[in-house]
Image (cartoon, rainbow, N blue to C red; front, side, top):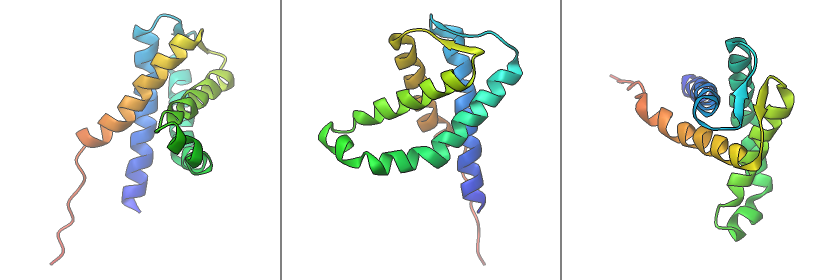
Length: 124
């Protein structure tokens, strides 16, 4: 139970940091409102990545096999685009900005769980 909660929290953190980094470093990505918008967008992105993305991955498994996994990038870009649509305060203008934002969030979803160690349970 705790491991499930840990994974969800890490996906939310990766979403928040990813959107923030994209807004800081990628031309064409900006957040026009306050930090609360960033937090809500990261929360929604983390929830989508945790609950909906596994279903999308299962449905699109044949396409991901045919494209050797590259269709996962399309799925991730679609999720980031959905966040852009849901939150009008986040502006991602252009396919290049969407691509680089997707890569940042994807890399953070890989790196952050590896940086935070899991608790070891000792059974006596």
